[in-house]
Length: 307
Length: 293
Image 1 (tube, one colour):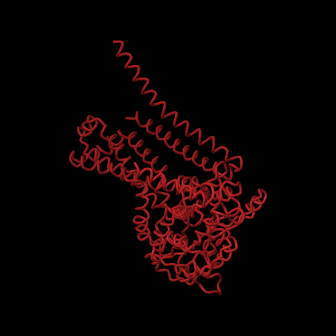
Image 2 (cartoon, one colour; image 1 turned 60 degrees about the vertical axis):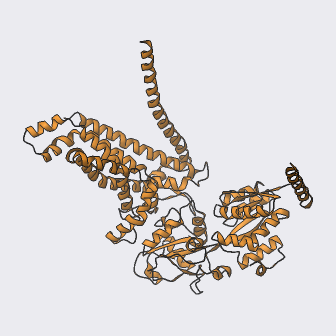
Image 3 (tube, rainbow over the protein chains, first blue to last red; image 1 turned 30 degrees about the vertical axis):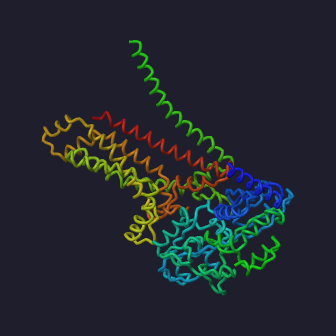
């Protein structure tokens, strides 16, 4: 019996203590948006909730657009987006007295993969765009053998499909692109297709130790025909911003985050948070976006101490 | 006496109810497809939908809604599958029904029926990692994600249906037909070709149609194995994106109530109509030959 009383007393003490130290009640945070980020956001939220009993975080997907719409309508505290907000969305937000501020959670690099026997080693962004627009149709034009290029891509319901089209292709995809049902199938197809080329998230072709999976070759990509080409498989190329096909994964908040929201976002950018980002197949926030994050969050510490 | 009457009537109503349910479900589905599909034409012209070949509703620029390319894709894959599956299936059915010993039949039939138990996603995967590369090697292509790949896989998938139904039809030919043929001095081959197969014609047609229905409606396998390129296919060695694959790819993410959303229902309704027409044709054909003997 006394054991129970003890438990109740201790429980009461903890309750009283937590009420005192962190004022009032459990705070609810809503995170909504990008399906690319949803698993990562869930991992981060669960880890953070384990350290702080006064916060409850609910994570839902629905797509970048849905998350941004929810932020504008005041239905979510954080909108996850694997693309920057559009001009129309910004205008809509201002109309609703919402002022979105972006912090970058991590980086998603997209690798260009070919068959190991492909003689081409690197491409410029212009060449890559021309290939997927269907303007370059033969490997010969890229310094390879005289063979037609066999194009692989994702399906239109994929965020990567949209990102790659809007940022690299900047036009309609060639209608010869074979739309594969997921990243795994692109890799499987490239392994069997000597003339194939495809785009996949780097996380998919690297294992936990950073070793590259066999059967496909990753191309080095340069910003233009005169600049150096970089491989996405090395962390330093992404970190420095030299590898050109990297998209930031955004978390939008209404105005500068404060209180619990700010503490949560700071956790995401802490060494522990960034380690989780890496475990999920993405890359830690790069230098350029780190500056932006610092402004958004008033981070007192420098990035060097976070690693 | 009273009780027996009551049971008789109850059972009659029960069976009528069962039959009516499937009809109602069918009408309901068709009504739903049509109701939603028609709304697409508020923004898409009929001419664009039926007579242009570019399907790109979530385009970078202007969306386009032409179904010719996917119509051709579905046609190509289905016809290809039937070209492979009909001779193979009817041949196998004939062997099982007429030639094989009872012991062989008892072993072969369950094995063939087991083919139907393979999930379509597994067949699709086999298409990607085995059949596709094989096609590429044999025909000197860079990859095997083509209409031919889909046709081969769909042929395999429709074989169990064709064989089972066709075998039943061939077995149901009365022995007296064969005996009459033999008594006139015909050998086994002649009897088979001239008597048994024509007598089971309607059943074999039904078998082919059922197999064809399987091929037209199959989604996962073609989605995985045929490459899904949007271009108009020029032949069996081109990648194709069928109507079913298009619906499966796009319906999951399409915003509710948009032209794109309704256009997918229009494609679904058209797919339904195609199946309906094929079935009616088959009924008609089968009926015409049934009484010729």
